[in-house]
Length: 213
Image 1: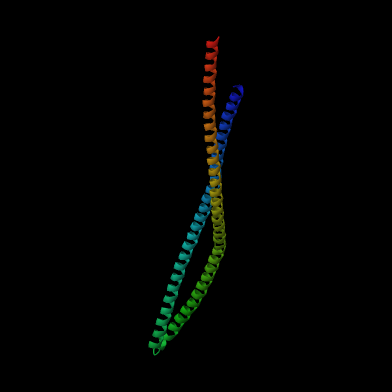
Image 2 (image 1 turned 60 degrees about the vertical axis):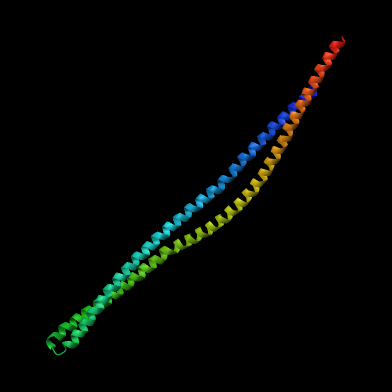
């Protein structure tokens, strides 16, 4: 009976150890999920920042287009004035008194047109160059973020695959532990029934001995 009691105690301790191992496996599975979720959130934040930066550059580009359009309108007005001046010059060629004044105005307008063209060209070239320089690092950053995002997506896929594999393994281990736990519990219950039967047998023997005495 003492050996049976020791065996019964060992079975109980084995059951408790298996339950602890099952709890540890469940905790480890929850910890494996957290780093992958953090990487996903970080990648989404970087992509959103790149999109905001790209939207700002597109707004600056639209503003530059508006300025270029206004300069073109000014140039068109100057050309129209020059055309009107040339028309008046042809119409008033017979009036010698006004010819000098008109030629002077034409020269002034031509000079102003040249200056406006030169100024507009310089401004356009400077703004275009500035926009290219501003876009260059942004394009590189967008490319880097796209590559990083692609790499993170691949890592996430690998992590998910690994996690699924580990989850499957953990589930199999948990199922095996639960099966072992059930077997041990069944063994313990069987041993308890045997102990009870032995106790009943011992009691019966004591009674018979008492009767014989």
